[in-house]
Image (cartoon, rainbow, N blue to C red; front, top):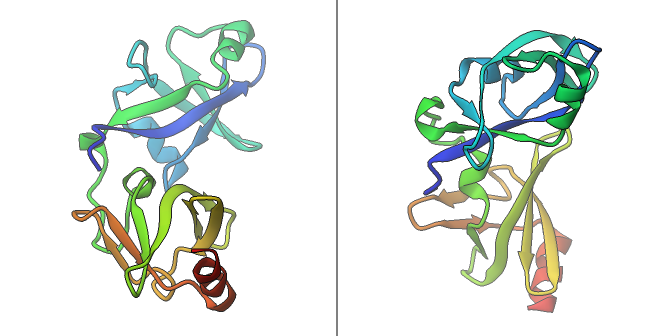
Length: 173
C-alpha cells in the first residue's frame, strides 16, 4: 500500500516488422493502459507514450514513441510498465489493487497465522491468493466466503480456508 507506482503491464515482444510491440496489460480493462501517463520502466529510467493499434494474440498491439524497427521492439521484451498510483482510479471498498495485497499477513478466523500473500493469480474463474508460510503454500479463492476481511490499514487478511485446506494448514502449523 505504500507503493507510489503500480505495474500496469509488460512488453511481451515485437509484433510485425515496423517496431510495433505486443503489450500485455494488467488493467481490468486492457485498453486503459494507454490512458495512464506517464508510463515508465520499473527503474523510472525510460518514459513511454503508448498508442494501441489492434488486439493481437495474447495482448494488444501498440506503438511506442521512438521505436521504429522490429529489433528495437524485441529489445524491450520483458520490460514492465509502471504508472504513478495517483493516476489510477479509486476503487470501491470491496475491490483492491493486487499490489496492495502482496505481502499482507494472512490469519485464520481464530487469529492463527497462515502466512503472507506472495502472489495473486487469475486463470479466468476468479482471483486466487497464494499464501506462503514456512514450508507450506496455500491457494485460496479470493471470495467473500473464504476471505471475509481485508484490512489494508492493519495490513492483514482474515481467511476461512475451505475444509481440507484449513485442516492441512492446522496440521502443519
